[in-house]
Length: 400
Ligand SMILES: [Zn+2]
Ligand SMILES: [Zn+2]
Image (tube, rainbow, N blue to C red):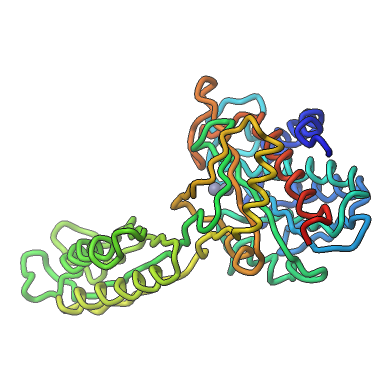
């Protein structure tokens, strides 16, 4: 049996060099030209067939095993965030206001390391590996959809048709050594909402001649709190957060209009439907009761990310063997964060797992999207080893 942990450790200088280079040269969603170029060049140097421009700046590499079999898609995201880096690291971003603050630089480096390892053992592969280097995970960045959906529109799940998929995230909420590989829903589905409350503006001292949208907004924000506490069953979960209130221009003017915006997070589609329904009823009922006109707009950003039971069980088995020293958490680790890999996992059975990456002693424990975010690079070795070994186990010919 191949010792993927030893091989990943041997390749660590390669992985680290790539990661630090991507970190110094971060690119926002759908602008990953340099990053995608390096990815394509590295894959081509291995003799892997490469297609560029899948989902704008996405790159796909196809590695055919020695024998025909199922197609496994491995997905790695490449985009950075519009954040001014404050780590002070020697490999800090050289592009002011753009930063790899989520660890996607690490994911891309892991992806190329995994490609190197699996390519070296292609004679033992029964099936095809589709390496999917995805743009714009962090949002749509001006496009109609985000990176995963954009690649799906361009057919990343077809020809050859993808049968299974794996993806990972370096996870600074947990220490190095922790692994989260859980069945079922592991990340929340996210909706974004806006409520436009239109009243009748006027003098602050003559409220009776107005229809006050500020009072309506205050009542709506309060009433929305009853959805989670009174409409969602106690053992289910949901979040309704109003995060923006915009209205008013002067202390003595009752405005014409107030706009509320925020987010809804759910795991279960039935719960989501109920929350959305109640949200519209409450916003409209309360607002109209107070004389305002109400426009509610709720848009789904991503569905909940749901892991397939049998694929996940296989990854757990691989993790126990390859990273036996690790603290493997299979107890249903879940986070209210969202991930657009959820779109692919709606179509294809797969597993999205987490690699603990913080190191408190070295102060590498700031949360994702923080200007001081950085992780323990040893997590790159673990992530590469687990991803490569899980892929090999799934395409070893014993499981199909
Ligand atoms: Zn992120
Ligand atoms: Zn991320």
